[in-house]
Amino acid sequence: DAGVIQSPRHEVTEMGQEVTLRCKPISGHDYLFWYRQTMMRGLELLIYFNNNVPIDDSGMPEDRFSAKMPNASFSTLKIQPSEPRDSAVYFCASSFRLAGYTDTQYFGPGTRLTVL
Amino acid sequence: KNEVEQSPQNLTAQEGEFITINCSYSVGISALHWLQQHPGGGIVSLFMLSSGKKKHGRLIATINIQEKHSSLHITASHPRDSAVYICAVSSVGGATNKLIFGTGTLLAVQP
Image 1 (tube, each protein chain N blue to C red):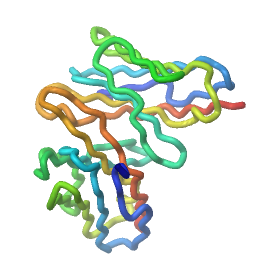
Image 2 (image 1 turned 180 degrees about the horizontal axis):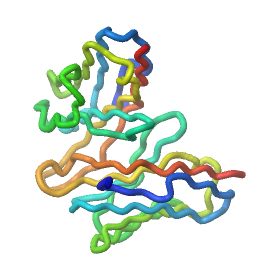
Image 3 (image 1 turned 60 degrees about the vertical axis):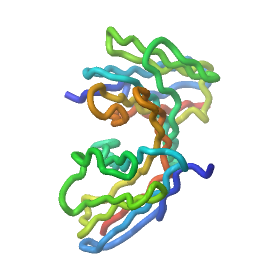
């Protein structure tokens, strides 16, 4: 398997523009996570899905952020409108969990977002 | 206070030294994870453990559930071990796949 795939790897945009980040999880994994990493706050969970359904979006900073998972092989994280403070590296991760067992999460390479 | 605390925040070692990174947590957990992030940015899961000890090559991870503490040891350290090491826990109750992260330990191993 190719692992978790994210695109784009780098994104530079201007304040106010819409940004869409994409993620393809490992085939067969039923959990998908979106994380944000900044120097100030480290890694933070934004939202995660189980079987394509959003389970916990309490980490989504504000209404400008939205995430979807239309099918088991694709998810998007959208920021509209973007602001300079959204500049960060955004990671997607996936895992497979049997009942009562916590599995390893596999991380994508990340998308480095710069909002000017 | 963070739910997951790591120490030290920064660590410089000479090649060949034995290295220990510590992680303490304040919540009930189902598992503890050690992650490695290289300067290029990619994150790799090193260990996931809920009790005892695990070993992989020169890396050893231990956990003491009663004391809510884990350590990551690197034996015979090498410059290629230079990276950020992140401790994370899966908390009990509700979503056990949800991770809470420490702030990371930046390790530099000098030749």
